[in-house]
Image (cartoon, rainbow, N blue to C red; front, side, top):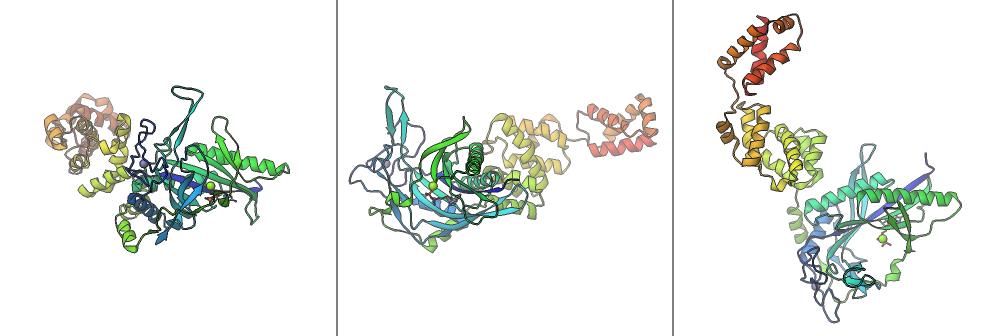
Length: 480
Ligand code: ADP
Ligand code: MG
Ligand code: ZN
């Protein structure tokens, strides 16, 4: 048992997937020719004036509502002043004293089971900086500035220092990630930096009220690194204190290869940035009506889906979680359910055979050649006993490659289940005549032999015999 408690607060930068930048009309496309997506505004040329992108505000309101924040009726853009070659204006336009969203929360599932509420301090809008490219192209000893990313829109989501271990931090981040992707405000691509995290970590003796001094770990962009970084940093601080040292407030960089962090710079304070309201941008007014419209158009979020799937549809918590994990899967499932209200059957296929096939073929569910219409067309034939669950797998495979309807496939391939006793009885009679030894064993009480007979009937009918009927007939005839 450790004598220390870890305290974690997270700042997440979410890159929004708007078509254009936050203060100009340049494209936000990723990976193009350096500086091909720039204009006087995002190059920071003197006299160029920023114009706020309405879509960015909508994204912020959506995210704020989905995380239970209050949406400010009036918020202010501020200049955060610092020098860096990728920041041509010499300041970043951000929000400081009056951000657009405040006082929210997320409920996370803890390792021990049960939920925990993590406070969300604020969400504000800001522009991203450009990118430095070191030692590429004509001169490997030079650095280059690419301003395509300059002025792309970000949301910064700041949590309260409410998390107490790395698992809680990851649960919080995964939940936030799922929400922004569900909302469609971000693609959430962590490798491309669309969702990146600064982790603030401190430790304190168990029972102490005051927080310890925090350090900030910058720009972590994978869940695994974040977990490693937090655990390493907490241990480093504990060791330091145990050795009689003190933690200094600073910004540190985690090196995933070395598995350790190192100091990057002393932590700057807000006043170092000389924040002041940006005189080029008027205060942003968001009225009740606008918030109401955005609220009315929010998609059903994972939490609500899980609740509906378990409470209304009677699915297991596990199934509900798998089906709601991403929005496209949940919408596919909901579409199936709308066509055929058999939740268990739809759930089994969507999270089972369909998910397996999509995975195998590397296809996303949005591009699935088997649509909800096709799939539920097949379910109807399972329900009315035209085909068995086993034959359904054959129909599904055929449906995947040909895109034909289940009825067509069943007809063309003659896959209809044989439920006609007149067709099955003669097969059973013949088996009984030819397998006297097995018949004896069954009569002597060896139940397992029944499986042998079922198998033989299925073989003789190419799997098309109605399994329930086969079992029933076999029992009757074997006992006669
Ligand atoms: P800054 O811009 O200086 O990093 P912010 O207010 O944007 O300040 O973010 C501070 C973050 O640090 C928040 O997520 C907050 O929860 C967290 N935090 C503050 N104090 C502590 C502490 N003692 N230990 C851990 N995290 C902390
Ligand atoms: Mg910070
Ligand atoms: Zn521009």
